[in-house]
Amino acid sequence: MTGNGSDPELGSEDSRLVSLEERLDRAEAAEAKRTAVNAGPEADANYRLGNRVLAELLGGLIGGGLFGWLIDRFADTSPWGLLVMLFLGIVVAFRNIIRLTTPPRK
Image (cartoon, rainbow, N blue to C red; front, side):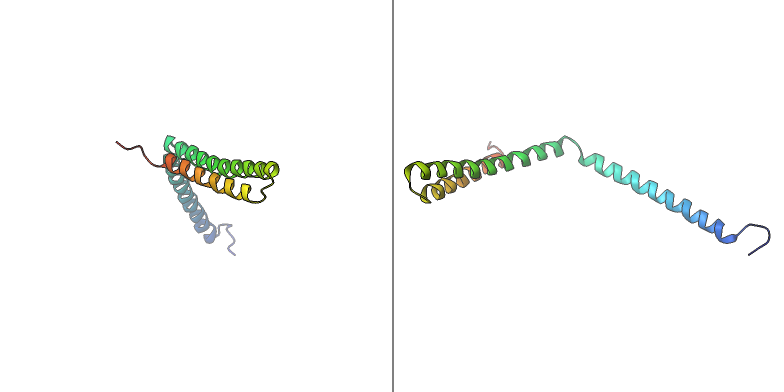
């Protein structure tokens, strides 16, 4: 310890902290720039398309299962009505998803 109250290590530590803060500021600015580019209208369109695909898939499965269960309940054909209608619901869901995701032909 020196008697004058100035420690040489503190000066070097302060410069390291300043350097770290500058690098953090640059990294935060670069990250903000990178995320601002991705958050445009294209990202919203992709998000909407993903939600639409999920809705089609769930709707086909749930709708086919519900109709199949109702057919089995009233026609006493358990489990064949449920299986057939669930399969048809899956086929319709995938057909709709393919139609949604393929671009129109010219």
